[in-house]
Every structure is written in structure tokens, then in C-alpha cells.
Length: 140
Image (cartoon, rainbow, N blue to C red; front, side):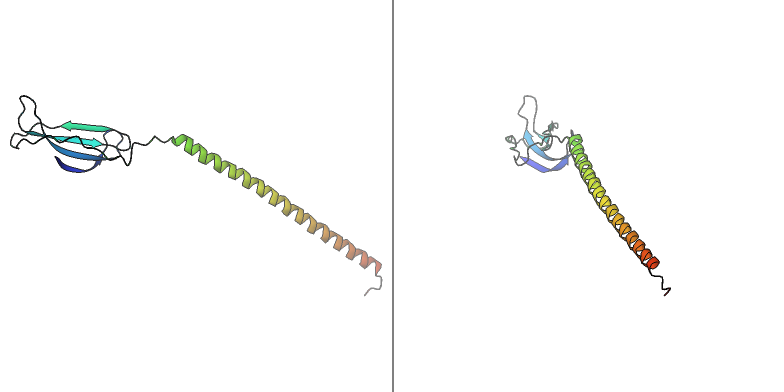
């Protein structure tokens, strides 16, 4: 019979795991009374840890309960390859940086071309104005 159930730390991977206390009847020769079994079942790493306590002589003997059928909703997951994930993220970031640098170079070149055009037009305007002033000898 299950006496208590709840959450505990897994002794192997230290993640949150399910635990139960089960009251059992020992039924072995020389043993009297019921015992208490402690089980921890980690859904992340799959560790199943259990230990039996000594029989307690004052409790009446109880019938052993069949093993607990643990829920199948979350089986142990495959370990993550953090190095590969980080390399993938860094690779994507580096590619975006290269693309941004290329776009920045194109924008900078367009800006230089535009400035060169403005400088050329300004020089032509100044030269044209000077040539008009030389041609105009009226002094006015």
C-alpha cells in the first residue's frame, strides 16, 4: 500500500523525480511484520533507486502490493549536445555578421558615390560661375 508519494531529487542526475513510500509485508523466514520501501524514479535519466527499511515489529502485517506502474507520459530524454547547439548558434550569428558587413560596404560605397557626385556638381557650378564673371566685364 502506498503511504506517501511526492517529488524528490534524483540521486544520479539531481533533477526532480517522483518518489513513493510503500508499506510492504516481508514474508521472509525469520522476518516478522511489515517493512517500508522507498523508491525514486527519475523520468529524465531513467534511474530507479529503491531501499527497504527494517521491519517494524509493532505494525500488523499487510499484504504486499504489486509494483507501481509508473506513468509513461515522459520517458527519459536523450542528452543534449550543448557544444553542437552553441556552435550552430555562433555559426548563424557569424553568417549574419558577414551579411551585415557586406550590406554596410554597399551602403558606404553608395554614400561615397553620392558625395563624389555632389562634389563634382559643386565644382562645375563654381567653375561656370567664375567663367561668367570673367566674361562679364561691366563691373556691375
